[in-house]
Image 1: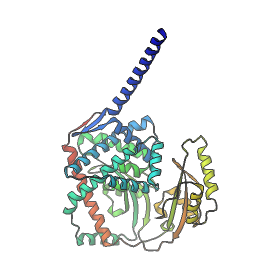
Image 2: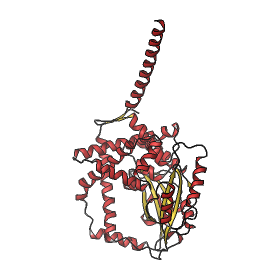
Image 3: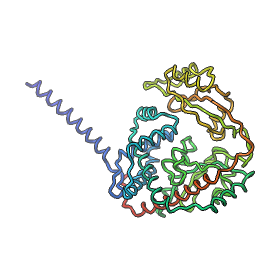
Length: 425
């Protein structure tokens, strides 16, 4: 009898401890980080999105980094709720089919299949639903902007001709390939906070974080959708703040936060060139990329073993068909489709490797965070002396997107100022 009573007390004690633990987890998961009008952002939402940002931006996953970017992540979540609310008011819906397509497109931009992307996220404890929520907001906002503002914007022939004339006048001058992150300052009281956030982002990029991933998450410029890419910009077209800074920068350098009329701007100089003059980095290569991920149970020497296996599989590759065939025979993930890129569009370490790689050959394994990458050059095209100019339709579309982005940014600013936003941390 005494023995049974002791067992019962032990069972009740364990059950109570488990209940307290579950209750504590539930309280943490459902704690409110912010309320945007009638929509809630939970602490779980904030923590999950922070993990997603850290992964894609290749930041160090430490408590200090999470604390530093938490405010910027929360601001982006608040903006997403506002965008979804605006879309709902306009009766704009996003179907599951739309989201599936967007996820497939996102995975392709990462040179991955959808299944591979989901596996990588799952292996790192990141729910794919966190990414899906972000993609849903992006699709809804794009449709809202198109419906609300596109019918109002007319790009005339004179505007297109002026832009074309300016492009022609710049031939022979120096152009800069730039990438940016823009953080808007909507209210004077936000000045110090936004300046500090810009400085933190700049410091992370200088330490190796991926600017495109951070731009997609945080930038409030029209270029956010393309990872902050401003394309090629002539010095005469630079803003006054950039005109004195960019020409002095080295390739790959990142500026300190620059105060502009609208807020703070971080700029990276990706490359520079002379308009209508070619060099060896204008050569266009057709590339295939293959990622061999680490196995689920990877030991301390996993990188060395994986690189050795990659070398044994792809040594002596003779053509991109052979590259894909070897991958299939070895049971490793299939390489990506063929991507045509100028050498100057590649990251400097990749550019150095591809520049010396023979057509049809596979590169040595390149260690990355997820495993090792192997590249194969399928074709190489020598650039001509004249890069050419965009046609009138391309110019008109660029002007239209620029105008729509400005209107969308102003609308979101107004929505933010009129919203009831309760940030609880």
